[in-house]
Length: 272
Image 1 (cartoon, rainbow, N blue to C red):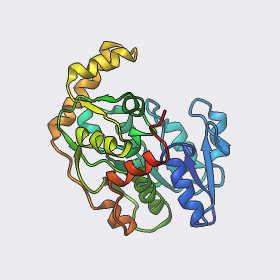
Image 2: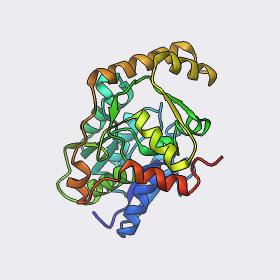
Image 3: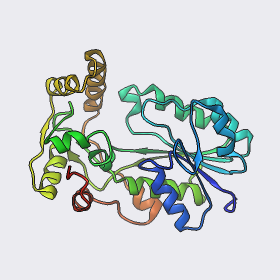
């Protein structure tokens, strides 16, 4: 099975491109599939599904935020010979009511393929590649979580866990909570970024600040209210505890947030 290509969906994204790179470095054949990748894949265009999965035995499965995992695609992939699926999900989806990812996990578990579910904490890269970047660059980030501490994890560590699950024995039927080495508040995180960049970034952790920030972005108040309720459910869970998954699966320690922030600043991630 190692000679058959591994389908990597979202191969130009934060985790997908890192997984593809790790697999290729390990001389594993990769079929990089995305809207703009080597193989075109579009969830809304079933004609792109067959070229993505034909002849493949393993698949890294993810979908962009807001996009559901279509059970018909998963069924098609398994029918065409995909025997192993590694799904990118997220932690706390039950508490936050993330029906999209809850359904995705159920689809994979019931697919008939061997499965592994990767449930990461907040990505470090949310701050420099994702939805927090504009706020960080503007000097003010609002997330309605107060002083809640989360074990932010590097996308490279998430990719390493997923790559191991795709290429090594012993990961079938497992769900991995992937975290960084320690829990930080969002205020801690932006302070670390401030030190790395040399300019101040302020954190606002109230629902009112979040509503105002979303309003400035043109997000409807109703949507902002739903998101605030989800964040409130996350707060009810309390501070997140780091896990040993990265070390246990990859044999090395996860990257700390400080190293991430220094590297991102040095390559100009937040320099206009």
